[in-house]
Structure formats: C-alpha cells, structure tokens
Image (tube, rainbow, N blue to C red; front, side, top):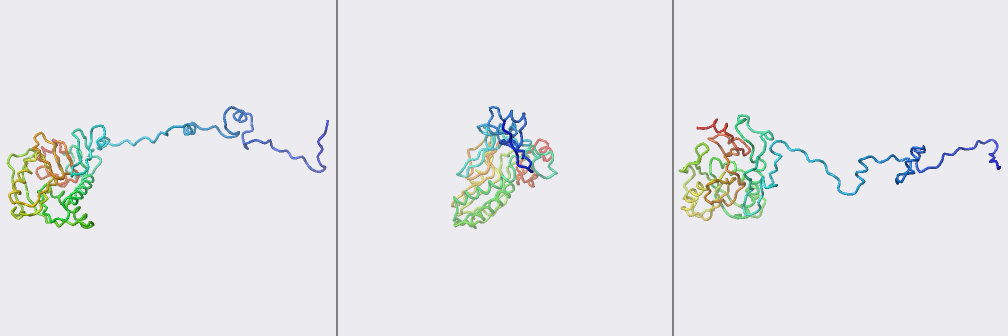
Length: 303
C-alpha cells in the first residue's frame, strides 16, 4: 500500500469538492440536479410565475380598468350602440337611440340643477373639439370669402362664439382668409318642451342688407327642419350670393321635413336637451355640458 507523504512542517490542504454551484452540495440538492431537469446544481427551482412566462404563446395583459357609472358603455359605435364618427362633408357624429350617456357624477355642473337632469349626453370637451373640426370644414369650403355670420339667438350664441373664434384662428394661420361680420336674429318656436306651429322672427338688422352677401347661418339645434326652412325662405327673398347653415345638433324626430344643414356637429335622438346655451324656459343656459332634462326639471321650470 502506497502512502501519501506530506512535506515536513506543512499541513495538507483540504480542498472542497468541485461542483457547478457553490451551494447545494447536500443530498437534497444533488438529487434535484441529477434528475431529468436541465437545472444547474444549486439553483432554486423556478416559481410558478417563471414557468408560465417561460411557456410559448401570448402573455396575458393586465385586466382592463372598470369604468364608472354610465361611462362604462362605450361611445364609439361598438356593438351597434354609441356614437359613430362620420368623416367629411360636414356630416356629424351620430349618437344612437340606445346611447345611455354619461353619469352626472363624472362631471361638475351648477349645484342649483342637482336633481333636474337625467344624464350628460355630450360633455363640453367633446363639443369644443367637434366645433374646431367644423371650423376647419367651413374654411376648406368657403375660405377666401367675405361672409356674414347670422347667429340664431338665444341658443346659438355659445356655439357661434366658439365657431367664429376657431375660424379666426385658422384664418390667422392659413394662406386662406375669411373676413367675417356677425349679425343676430332671434327665433321663437318652443313653449315649454313643445314645438309651436307659428314661428316668430325677432331682432336682427334689415335682412335686405344680405343681398349679394355670403351668409353663414349658425344655429344651436335643427329638429323637424320647419323652423330653419321658414328662416331660409325669408333670407332667400333678399337674394344673397350664398347661404350655408351650420348647426351644433340635428335631432332625429318622428316628423322630419327632410332638411339637413350643410354642417352639423352631432346627430342626436329625439330628446329634449339643455346646456351649452340651450335652454328650457331660459334655464340651463349656464350649463357647459349638453344634458337630458328629467321630468322633475321640466315640472320645476314649467311656465
């Protein structure tokens, strides 16, 4: 038997057994490393999450946030409901009959109207963006012209002011220029929430001054179209050079006269709406959003 001799005066060094990992040299870890798994000795086994991520195929995304109130219904025309954006030609955003609107809790509005509204149909921010696009369409069609803007009071004043401001900004930053003069006319065709048979035209300068002019009529809402047709007939007698009509809203009614304005922002169901200068017996003009009034509100402000 051959003996292994060490040098005198020196101790023999004890070397650690070689392994692929510094840890896990015990029987437990050696057993895991010697199995059919490609894991290196001493490595911890993968967690369940790591095993799922290592598997091929698409990774599941995060769960979508849950919207609140009525806003959980989408407005983009998905599933046959909501609002469908149509492009070009001044055509508007169509809001379907089953669009439930937005919960009032999602917005701020005057406290004195608490309990008088059903829901928000069109938020103020969407109105502003849509009005800016209408201004662009008008600039493309009748740019490089002097026009007379005929604002229909009282409901159209806010839409008219925003529309004119957008046209001025576009004209200021464009090679095309529109020179505008603004005049006002007032139409009265509603008593409470019912349309009257006889329409009254009040205010405004002598319509004969529109002879040979390019006229842009700005209205808040077109319902049956009867009111606008009466106004157009009166203006056409003065032989203007051109007449265009821009309306913020077009209402789908059971008695349409087949009239459509040249430009409009939104096509809405046959609902009585208030806000953004649209009123119910002179109330709700100070409401920024376009909302649907409820029965309590109608009874409260009925005359």
